[in-house]
Length: 397
Image 1 (tube, one colour):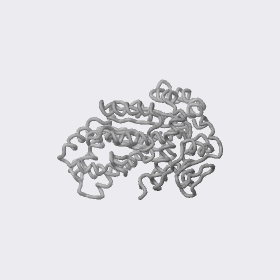
Image 2 (cartoon, rainbow, N blue to C red):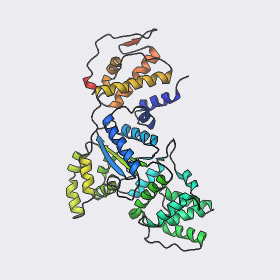
Image 3 (spheres, rainbow, N blue to C red):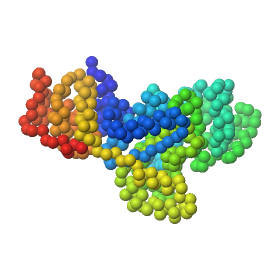
Image 4 (cartoon, rainbow, N blue to C red):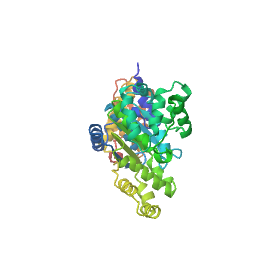
């Protein structure tokens, strides 16, 4: 019987859409940057201090694939992972929308589906977890809203109230008035905020709260992966500057977030098209005179971001060999052809790795169905022959 997991991987590769499954099995490429990221993840897990990194690359050179590889690496290290692609609906200048989208795409280790609310069942009013989280929410955040919300959540038996309070933790923030009403109904006491909560000003409390919660639940940290960061360049001037300030929370984290590793991926053209093209440093001075930090430091990090280099011939060979292996497992056959013939078949696919992979899959499809593809033929004994010399592989780099 065919290998269902291999079939799933081949179909994901065929679609050209990066996936966690592909990231799990195709992680051999880019060993240098993966070694650096692995080291950073270990340090975050060990010392509890947060860290962040930016990577850049041209279209189709594997940024999203790298994020998916980090996703699987983090899960293997018992870390919670959140994944977000920036978009018009989720712009980086509005942190409360970023939080909502991230939380809806948060995966606990060994879980295939997103969601974390099931772990809150461990937090009963007298549980050790509640004893950790309630004092933290009361004293360690900018506001004490989450203290009142968490205490009400653990003590209400009204399912509608519980739903509203759960939704708040997921980013559908409950207004201050109904929260005060719920709390007073349960405890007979009024809510007295030390600072009145505003989602536009205090959303950072939720990131800090979640990071503390995940560590107290026994996870080794929280990994936040943000793709399509170049879409920040489509925002208006002031919105872009606010987006850089929000990025600083993740790339230049203070002590409020615990054991968080953040990674942003953006196009290598961002520096030329946006930072230089739209004069971002001058914009900072004009809009925030004397208050350019931390956005200025973030801009410099974007300029210095390590760029994904084109894959080497050896790395491409490794990937094509893996495609060959998975295609055989997926369809229960032996695609016994040389890497040179596969490289030749993918030569017309251009320089993008994803198109080379799709060309390789089409090559194997034809061999599987018809016994031949282009100038390559498989006979009954699995032999192959070529009608012309195989070209050099320099163009595959």
